[in-house]
Every structure is written in structure tokens, then in C-alpha cells.
Picture 1 (tube, rainbow, N blue to C red):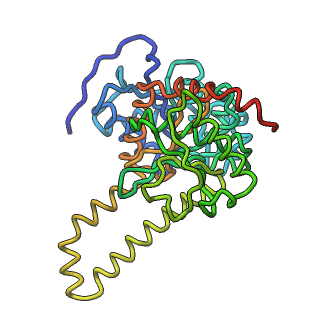
Picture 2: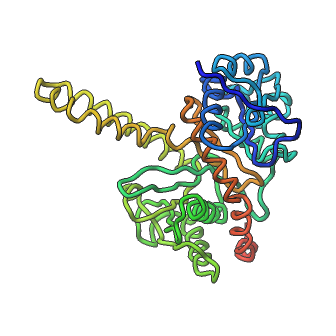
Picture 3: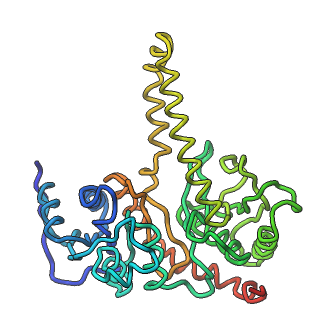
Length: 360
């Protein structure tokens, strides 16, 4: 086993450090530690592992590593479980790995937070401790989905089941600037998920939100295009780059896509083994099928971002493996380098008068 050697320096980790909740996921802390090691080996990112110090030291040792300038351990005696009440746990478990990791961002000792733990608890910790960006009504969860031509980004995926028109419009704007900054899209196309493309379709909520987005897109400083309603069948078509929806519908879309992709792969596997000829064809197609499976796996995308908070936070899948944690850390670090939080604040502020004009 190769031994990693680094020099410890006695100073606070700078703002670019990422606080990693090392105890939150189903595979913690093994996946978190292995993922952090791979991330610091790939780039100059710094990671603070937050959790049981004895377990984290032992896990680092199993990889031939120890604490150093790029990997620090911060002890936390408690763990937020998937059964904990999201609205109460940040007060009840003040020494949890999730709470300590969030506090590191609040204090400025870390620049961002990553966790594969209870997503509802992550939302409550961020809302109560990091707060929202000025003028943001509620933060939204955003994630990219692969399609034949690039990606499509959807917001919100579960943070808000009941929304207002301004919230829905802000999800579209937050998503547009996320794509513009992270994926270098000059003018992302923004749409609202609906049951038809005609203006008469949808609900009062989607119609009002669409009008707000239409006005925002006409702003002199707007850096996105509003395309109107988008049907479910066109989510993965090349008609929109960012899709705004409420958290209830967005979460249903997310789980449906995950289920369909898994079912399709199972059906292909069954079909490939149905006859001798199919088995031979399956052997030839295996590399391409494995590449396709890997390209749509959640681990490639690292995690979902919580946009609209006064900080940077990534929520990983509860079953995240080391690869998913690594990609989440690297993705979060890119957002820090691109000043995503500040850019989103400016984007929402440019339309401040629009939000004030709406009666809540």
C-alpha cells in the first residue's frame, strides 16, 4: 500500500475548505473518507472530515493516510439519522456531524458543506444556520439529468412541496444562472413544467410564475431565455435547459427517472439473456451498455445543490459510494471557485422590484 506523506501546518483552513459530514450516508464513514482522499489527490481542494474522530483516524490509516494540510478531522459525538425529525434535529443534536459541518461554514472556517445524510435535516440546518440569500423566498434543490444532447437541469426536487409564483419563478432564475456559471451556457433556456405547452394549460400558480419569468427574461440584464411551458415528455428533449417546478412534482420526476432507468437496464439484461443469439449480441454490446449505465448513474453527478441559501451546500444520495462523494466534493469546489453564491445573489437582486410587486 502506498503511503501518503504531507506536512501539517498550524493555521486555520482557508475559505476554500469543504466541510464533509463523514457520518451521514449509508456507507459512512468508509465512502466519505475514500471519496475525500480521491478528491484531494485529484486537486488542491481541502476537506474537513467531521465525525467520530477515532473511526475517522482508523479509516484514514486503513488507506495509509493521516491528517495533513489537505485533510483535517473535526470531532462530532452525534449522528443525524434518516429517522430524525428534520425540523427539530438541529436543536436536539447540537454536536452532530451535520451540525458541526454546517457551523464550520457559518464561521467561515469552511467555504461549503457536503453531506449524504438526512436531506430534510440538511435543508433545516442550512435554512436556520446559513439563512437565505436576500430576496430569495425559499431555496430549491437542483440537479442535472443526462439527455442525448447534453443535460437538463431541474429545480426544485423536493425542498418545497407547496410554492408561490415568486418561488417558482426564482427556481427558474437560480437554475439558469447555475447552468450559466457551472456549465458555461451563455443564455440557458428556461421553462415551467406543465401539462401542456399552450398558455391556457397549467394552473394559476404556473401561469403567474410564467408571467414573472417572462418579465424577468425581458430585463435588460437578463442572461436567460424563457421558452414557456414544457410537457413531461419533453424533459429530456433538446427544448429546454432549465426546468422550474414545485418540489412535490420535481421529486416525483426524479424518482420516476431513477426507476425507469433501472427498469430499462433490467429489461435489457433480461432480453440479452433470452436466446443464444441474444447472449452473443449481449457480449458484443456489453461495453457500450456498461458505459451507458455509468453515464446515467447518480454517482457521476456527485449530488444535488441547495440553491438560494447564503452559502454553498451539496446533498448527496444516501447510498453514495466513494466515487459519488469524490464527484460531490470536486463539483462543490468548482462552484466555490466560480463564486456561485455571490453570482446567484446578484441575479436575484437584479429582479428585486419584480418580487416586491407581487402580492403574497
